[in-house]
Structures are given as C-alpha cells and as structure tokens.
Length: 120
Length: 508
Image (tube, rainbow over all chains, first blue to last red; front, top):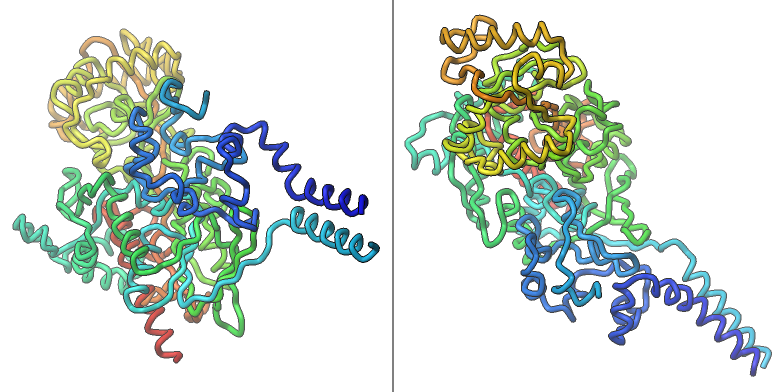
C-alpha cells in the first residue's frame, strides 16, 4: 500500500507540483491562490483550455465594475475607448507578471501604488 | 496489490502525458468561418448571422476591430448625410474620378458596384447603431468622409466596431480570440474550413461551408513589405502595432489564389527621442505652411501635399534615405498655439487644434538631444544640425522666403495662402518619415467577393474582403475618395457573407 501512496503522491506532484512551485514567483497567481482560489476554479479540468472573459467576470463582475476600481488611472485600463470586451488574459496572464497591453501604443503606464492592492 | 499499483502507475503515466502534451485538437462545425474580426469580418459576421447562418470568427489579437478601431470615417456618395448638407457630388462623378485616379489599373466593375452601394452601406451601418457626420477632411478632398460619431465610451472606428460586435454577440456569433488562422482546408477543389492555433497551443479545426478572409493586410510584417511591395519594411513603418502579417493573403495564395497591387497607404510622421507620438511636434509634420527639404538640403515638393497624406508619404518616401525635414519658425509655432493647426491629423488631432503644449515638447525634445528634432538661430546653423549641405539649404531657404514675399513659388507653385516667410525667431526642423496606416492590395476577387485563382476562376467556398483584396488601387491609395478603405471593408464583408449564404442555400 505504501508504494501506491508513493506513486499517487508522485502523480500529484507531476500534475500540480511544478505549476504551484512556479507560481510563487508571480504575484497574480499567488494573489488568487492566497484567496483560496484553486487552479480548477478558473481552468476547470482542462489546464490547456483558453480562459474566456466570462470565467474572470463570474467573480469580478463586469468591465464597468473593474473600471470603477481603476478610475484613478490617467488611462483607465478597464474603460478603453478603443476596445470592448478586450480579452482579460491580454494583460492578466496569471502565470506571468501582469502587463498593461495599452502600453504597446501609449508607452509606459504606471499606477500610484497607494491605489493598488495587488502590487503591495 | 499488484493491480492497484499497475492502475496507479498507468494513471500516473496518463497524467504526465496530459501535462506535457503540447495542446490538443479542438474541432468545430459551422456554416461560415471568418478569418479576422475587424470591420470586414464583423460586417460579414452580422450579415451571415442575420441571414440565419452559424458563424465563427477567428481573431488573432486579444481584441476585435484591428485597424478599424483607429480609423475614423467611411466613404459614401449620394448619402442622406450629404443630402442634408445640399452636397451634390454624384456616384457617376465619384466613380469616374476613382478610376482615373488609379489610371485604370483597378477593377472598374468592382468599384462601380461599391460606389453605387456606398450610401446603402452607410444606411446598413446606421440601422445597426452607427451614426455619422459628413465632413471635408482637407481642401484637396471632396465631402465624402462620413465621420463616425462616438458611441458610449467608444471613439472613432471603435464606435463602429463595437456596434457590430454587440450585434454579432447578440446574434450568437462565436468568437475565438487570440486564435490565429494558419491554413485553409482544401478538399476536392473546395475550401471546406480553416485550421488555427489558439494561444494555449491547441490546434483548432473549423469545418465550414464557406470561409471569408478579412485579416487586414500585411502592414506589420516588414518581411512581407520587402517581398510584396516596392518599399523596404525597415524604413516604411506601420503606424500601430496591430499584428497584421498577411496571414489571409498568404493562406489563399497557398491554394493558388491570384493577387495584385500590394502596396502601402503611406502618410508622413516622425518619431525620436523626446517626441510624443501624435503629440504637438508630431502634428507639425502634417502642416502645409512649413518648408520641406531632403537630405541634399533642397526643396522637393509643394508642401501643401501635406493635406493629402498618401501623396505626402509618397513625396517623402522617394527622397534619398526615405526621409526629409520640415522647417518652421517661431511665427509658425505661435500660429499653431494661438490660431490652431491648418491641417488635422485626421480627427485624432482635429484641424484648428491649438498646440498648447508645443513649447514644452520643443524644450523636452531638445533636452533629450532628439535625433529627429533640432533648433537653430539661423539657417546655416540649422543645416549643420540636420547634416545637409549648408549652401543648398541656404539657397532653398532664401528662394522660399522670396516666394513668400513675392506671392509666387516659381519652383513648385505652392499656393501663396500657405507660403509664409520663415524669418521669425528660432528655426526648427523636424524629421519627416513615411509611415503607413495599412497595407492595401492582395487577393483578386469577383464582384461577389469570391477569391479567384490565377485562371480567374472562383475558388469554391473562399471569399475575401477589406485590405486583403486587390484591384482597388494602383500605386497609391485613392485618398481623394476619403474613407474608401473603411467603407470597402464593411461593404465587402457584407457582400462576401451574402454570397456565402446564397451559395450555402444553393448547395442544399
């Protein structure tokens, strides 16, 4: 029975261990994990499936609501005058450091850290 | 015990395999698959869905709309908006002018149909929540530019894109975002679908009765600019990073599609240390009252060509090194601050905008030791700063100021209205370089937007529209017909979907 347990543990390590260890380096994913949100909460049972906006907005409400939370920003990243329903994962890749997609054209966008609960 | 071990081991292997396998294949079946979610693809999607077809859109970017988000107006003639302003240009006059403009190097039959339906196209969009105001964008263009009115929080083209997007979402169109199409599925002489890859690395196969290509051209691929046009991709840069790399044109060419007329919709612009994109210094590159000189320090054009951005791009692009300099003085700076600019950068910077920040931008650009902006107290010193022969620049400058004084520009016949002496205070020079809003030219199509092969036979099941289509322009975008490309994108998307729906119904 011990061998089975060992194999099972190894198996779990293969499935989850690598990703979780990896996650420690990245604030966004860590933030989700600290809030008790599991990989499967977003990914379901398929980590290779692309995550659609509906998944993010099922917790985060709407772009309008998110826009309220970032209204301090000079360019409100959640209220773009150019795009509607921009893919959340364009900025929030979760497994990487977040990056504001707007910067591709607008140049560096910085947010006063006093407004951000994430980057603390 | 043994069997439990075996099972666990097998499960472990399976789990590892799932973890390490690079994606999987996801298959869909639909009536119409659309490559590209710009205004061509969205107009096609809404048209198809309204006709009862199941529609899927593949979009490479994390947003819809592509360059249409940043374009501003659509061509139309004999429209209600023109009628409301008692503006009398006719379809026939516009058609004849467009054909002549391109020296009959364009598809007159396709353009005739497009011009004839241009007002109907605007009405179709208006019925779906897009509002317009018709304007004359420069003294050199007629009043055919139907400027999109802002809608909710969305500006310019984004107001049109999001209106169509909302209709498409409501009508059940399925969007696969960040999922670039890779190749067409071609069986027994028919296009039967499209292969793509999503951003998680999964292979996506869409089996479809028709495929419509609207991927917006190849302006973001310097490599394809090198290969497909007379320009070099390093010096002729795209205005915005929109990821348009000619995917649609390429995959149709792989099936033997014919193509023609690949070129760029040029415009002047600048960039460099301390220069704000679309800022006040940038806006000076579009002004008609500056003096332009090339690397030899010589004038090369009537600078009012700035009113026609595509022509201005041509004039600058053909100079040595593909650049030039716009020279102005403190009086022109003050004019821009107090009276506002003589020429808008489209409506991104509308005509008459007061460049209230230009003195600060000048200070910043000089402090940053910009390679694209210089100031000097006299013309000799300015020649040294911009590294052109002093004698040449001095002669050009003196001749220009004489032309201003005498109200006659013997060299290039620049209108005296815009020829003002550059003799006030400091002289400035900003580097002019050619950029492009989009590529134009590409796949040959029938009037029904069916892509044809090199024998000009339609490829069954394959349609194209927008800036992936050839036969509309010769060497230069038909700027005279303001808003031609944006109007054609929406028009051709609609026609492509109508044709696809008709073909699907006929095959039943």
